[in-house]
Image 1 (cartoon, rainbow, N blue to C red):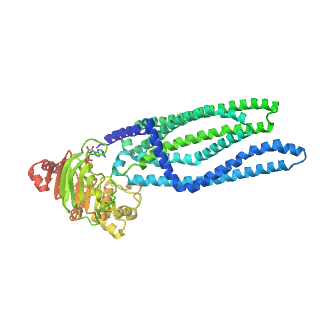
Image 2 (cartoon, rainbow, N blue to C red):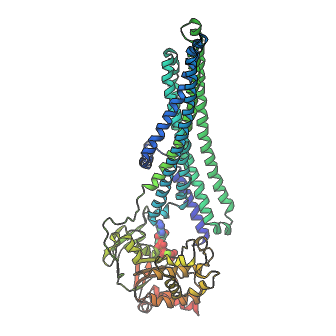
Image 3 (cartoon, rainbow, N blue to C red):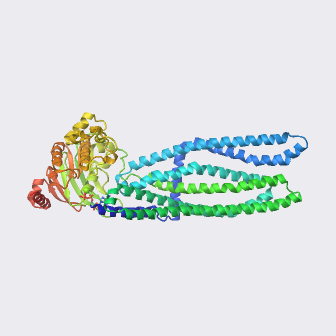
Length: 613
Ligand SMILES: Nc1ncnc2c1ncn2[C@@H]1O[C@H](COP(=O)(O)OP(=O)(O)OP(=O)(O)O)[C@@H](O)[C@H]1O
Ligand SMILES: [Mg+2]
């Protein structure tokens, strides 16, 4: 596949991601998503119920203490000062001392709340990040082949950040705001019920605007979550494909795509902020109108003697405070919408079940012999309609080396993925020593079957670490022996630090052929009963490949192997060749037999011989 095709495919994929991330959400889907994210939030909070209650207690206490302040002012004005003027200062003193105590208590409880809630929040985020990572690792290869790494990254970063914002600031504002609104409402009624009625009348428009605000802000934040995910996806994939991007001068096109996503993110955020602005302005207006009415009517009643000045003063102070928290409530609602939208996406990943699940009652297979049987197997990739492998059966006795040959797209890798159980067949079963792979415990399966692909993924760490991945308990001598067996010892020993040389990110320090040799050594060290090599020698030069082949012949002698190779020299060491065409086995026999039959394999063989001449 050329790089140009790769770039083109990536673009298609991005568009697919884009569509999925911003799909229009119907009302019922929205509710279902919200329920799902609330479920997740509940399960995250459950282990911290004790400390959460403590934090709520602190915030309630702090607010009560804070609320008592103006009441004490009213008492000081209406009772303390007149009494002091008459010579008795004790009431005034009590009011002042009480006020100071309340202020101190408010500060202390606020500190306690921030400390406790901060801790709970961080523990919860730790738990969530761990869960996302664990679960993503557990999900099958099939999931990752369709859900791009960029999307997983955005779940783990920006979506978790949204929840962090809610926990750090949102909850604080919610408790403060809700408690002061409720507390003040009670005090207002207590101070003067008729005046309080004016305030209550303002509730109706306030409630209506609140409803509007909640709905719009949820929509807006779903937009921002989708847009930021697209930005991250675009960024990650562009950087992963940086060689293709630069080789084909794709920068301008990528910039254009990025610009579009970036603008979407800005628009979604602007929308959210606009909604917030309208909401706060409306609430302020409602507050100011109520205040004006209360002042006018209150002053009239003070003049008439039916209301005390101190009460009116306290009332107006409370009334101002009453509408201030609505800003905070709006802030909370924003953080909540953003976090809910994020949790909708996170819970989507967390509720995803591995399509290749671990068996619940596994059959123990600690020493597999390596007989592989395909029984009435059919396969199509999940979510697609085309049958890549039409129904077939195949018996590979233990110890046989099978070469899979066929044109690009014939289904060779797909068949290999079934042997390694990266996918389960759509119908029928793949069996190891007569046991359905679906029933083999994961540890037994991974010990018995090892697949080496062209990818040859190396992890950050030393060369020795990367070989030891095949068998973590291996000693240094065993590691070096495995490397020597595949002919990798010389080049590794020549590296600056030998086996301790850091391979750098993804093995960037090694050449493609060297990475293949390390991957080979890793597979040989693992010593599996079944070895699957998918174009594992394609990057080697001819002399190195010869060396590896010589090693292959000894290594493959006593184990089952599936070899996919375009070079016939590699294929010729097989006991049996399967020629695939459109997912169907069209030829099956030993290399010698097939060459004699003058079929496809014979034609390939002739072409190969001619090319050597
Ligand atoms: N993850 C996937 N999802 C959907 N279709 C896929 C997926 N992987 C492969 N296919 C399709 O399955 C068919 C067989 O692909 P496969 O990778 O098995 O071919 P192959 O014989 O290994 O080819 P090559 O020699 O190029 O590696 C192809 O038509 C391909 O488009
Ligand atoms: Mg392939």
